[in-house]
Image 1 (cartoon, rainbow, N blue to C red):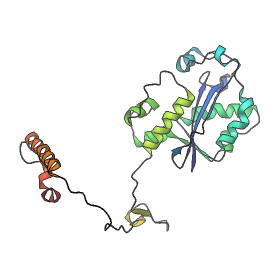
Image 2 (cartoon, one colour; image 1 turned 120 degrees about the vertical axis):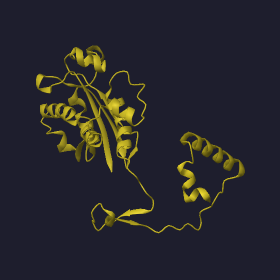
Image 3 (cartoon, one colour; image 1 turned 180 degrees about the horizontal axis):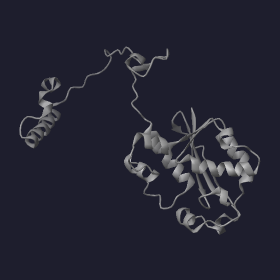
Image 4 (cartoon, rainbow, N blue to C red; image 1 turned 180 degrees about the vertical axis):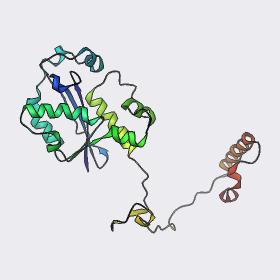
Length: 239
């Protein structure tokens, strides 16, 4: 499974007003592992950025003046995204800009060159309705450090989104549960528990010091609840 986490920076908000892409950052994952095979390119847009956009990304006209244009890198870009699922936060924004760049060159649309496009913002909104789901908010929610992110950057944002995507879609994996290939529904009938040989597992009982520390912790819990804590009523607590 090949996935590309993608982000762009632009000179403004609307490609229909002549705004252009000035940076593309894309991070490759294969089978949910980062490969470090990334695509990153600054682009000369042949125009200035709007003041609001410049405040977000900090990429000046002077800095971009000697960078290649989109047509100079389009083949490398298409090769990179080919046959992969693209994961983009607020995908409509980036897709409109990339489609506009491709249209200028007669190269179709982005969806023509990849397997599919998944909007991570829509996924986040379904998972966390009524909450903020910006990239910064998701980093906070999933405890992913973005302290080094002072300005927006396409590659940095792609790397952060990749970490967020893995956290959002991790689910609960099990070594002893198999999915029924017969196509049963998502209920219990669609799962079966595989056999697990426990005879070779080594049992390490707690030593006296560990038992004493455990008892001291339970005593603190008893004190906090003003009685006997729930743990002491569990069958395993009597073993």
